[in-house]
Image 1: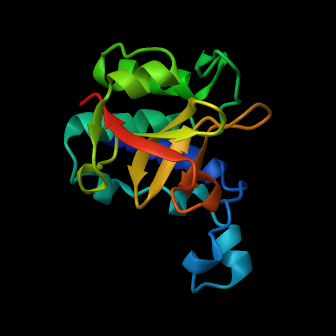
Image 2: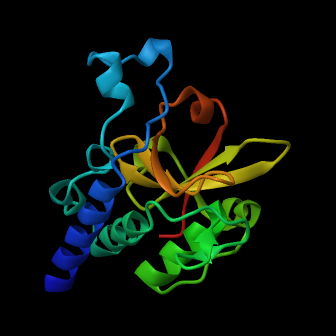
Length: 181
């Protein structure tokens, strides 16, 4: 219990240190009622569910969110699978599953997509994965954290961050929800 609280606090501290990133703009049909400058620039803390909302999920899912949250701000590195080396998107998923659950999942996005259990939006819970097709094939994955947001390692030159599922870029490239839980 104490370890969970400490991990949650560490995640929140890391999130507050990552407050300078911008959230992708929503499509015009999903515009926020807040002023544009506020909706476009707000802290990472407001993007990830707070500890009380995570507590409604089982401990395995909570550990996954805590581990994923602890990687925010880590640089992107193709083939990377650790905070020290950096992460690519599938490497981030293998890291989270190994460190939160002690399980080994496939290394590539395509293998993760094919071997994960497909779930519906109604079944989606924090800790599940979202798969996207940004090119000819499915080649991007992120971990759902709740509130229609996911953590992922975007392309080169960027850092692990929280993004909205409602971003028009990601929304039109969505392929499936999957899970290894």
